[in-house]
Length: 363
Length: 200
Figure 1: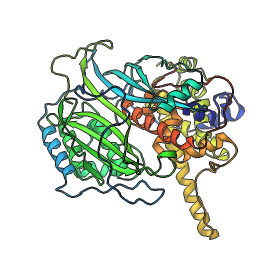
Figure 2: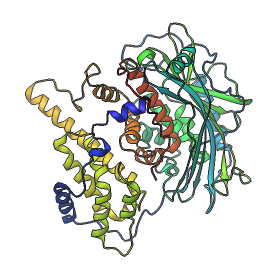
Figure 3: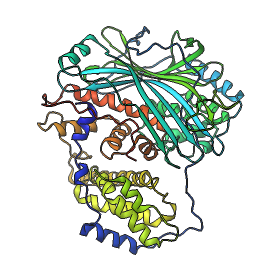
Figure 4: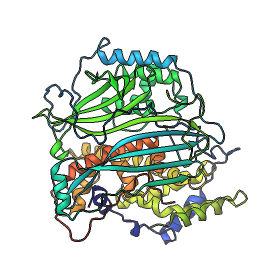
């Protein structure tokens, strides 16, 4: 039993118990609703999706090892965090700190990049990424398997498209996982490939109104802090996550990307990733938000957590994202998840992976 | 399992069709899953009212309701807002009640703690401990049976951003339940994994 199965079993209103639309109360409700006047509009405002904005970004990050289990990174600095809180671990903050400098450099780089528009009619924004996908079987004694998940997305200007996903190279993260898998009868490790086509309007690829976001950093900061760009809880960790959501969009115009970097330069709790100068052979700069896992995270409570974004120094493109947990007792870091953004650009069909001229990364 | 394909055929809109009958088709097709969404999130005595609000919004803005299948995540998005509004109202009411009664009142749905005997309650309690957006990501996929693409629309983020949040939530949930796993169960494991799965 995996965690998805557990959650499904905890559904308080299972699919078989959904209320019927032809029940007396449902019909009564319908009658009441239709007694209200309907608002009429002169034109139909929404018949399709907004202009296409694609998600994935990045240049090839060819040097990443297959399934990462541990990496050698310096441990988080020791800091006391009250129990139950995921407080940020303070870095050397202020205008002159290294993360701010990195973001300001990236903002300058982004400003100089040529704008790339969305795909035209019949074209698709294409992106390919590679991520760590950890699948666990929670039946006792239980085991986890790590896969490399390759994902491709094609999104047309009308919101139609295709997603292809394939999990390969299963690796047990620990010898205990392998031993438990054997003890449980060597259940199949094959993950069924996923290939799904979507009709017009079915693929939505960014926060609503992304292209209309202000490029003034102060106004953008206010919108993000007020959760007007995306919903979500308050706090600097969520700020950082939402900044990443926008930077991950490939057709956010250069001015907007530059503004995002300027906003990020003031994000509390963000610091530069030490010792990181390249990623997959590309000159890179990394920034990270650091906190500690609060209670409720099982055996990982109290672990340090680093959410890292790694950018191409020359183009400002997002190369990768990683979450790294650090054992506070041993200092040993574990890569909890990563996504490498391999390639993106415009192609001519939902099966093509050949970018049309001048449309590829950077984003 | 709700037959989405049939439902979509039912509500596919004909421009010449009468507005009322079109809305009725939409209502008939989508009512069960929207009502289910609401019932999972608000007290039973409030659920019918909130569901009615969702469809009242759809009726008032019917010209803006996208055609199938886009109407599905659109309606879930409206339902999400209506549920949030109901929760805010409930919080205001509880605070008022607390002031009036001089008692400390804590809001939120009454979920059992992790130590309760019912494993489902323990899982729901663990879900309740997640960040709101992470919890919603899991619930939209695993309870409402939305595809990741549809759930991304409901949450207003990209498919890829949703995928990252879903993974983060899944991991947090796994860690949270790991210490209170249910006892071993007989039979083969049901590996239900639906990344980005659409039932269409």
